[in-house]
Image 1 (cartoon, rainbow, N blue to C red):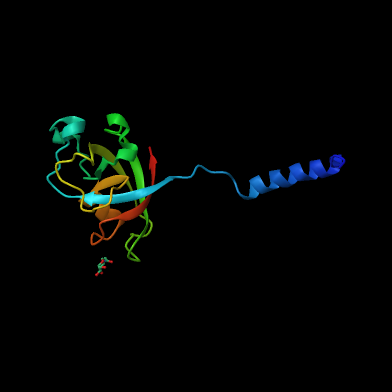
Image 2: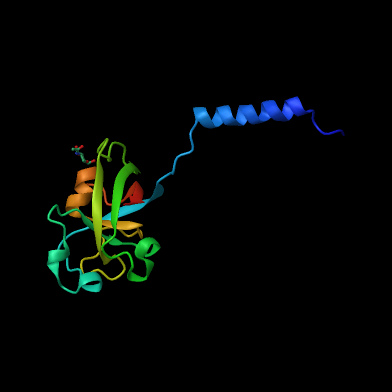
Length: 145
Ligand SMILES: *[C@@H]1O[C@H](CO)[C@@H](O)[C@H](O)[C@H]1NC(C)=O
């Protein structure tokens, strides 16, 4: 086979350029799962027992092993959005929360209300802002900020 003529290569490049204009490449969020936990909230492994570390909004969470990062996760902030759940209409449409990591889900004093290990375990306030509190487990999109 002979190599393709130059005009084919040229128009191929133009086509790829056009594709990129039509469908710009954007950074996709990470996808994971969220459970929830209730009081007592004691941030032992991150901040000792300093409850001053909780945001006044009560939008906080404990980190699952996937994002725990050997403790570096303490204090990190994430944007979290509910994308689906086992029961339809569990997600509150259009709600995104910004949460602060204050604990490790594996060892938190108050245990996650779900038998499945989640990427992130949200405070009751945080979970209830993006989903119906009758759910214990949701699929989320999240992004560190
Ligand atoms: C939350 O879910 C429960 C059980 O599925 C349902 O009865 C209730 O209406 C839901 N609440 C809202 C605000 O959608």
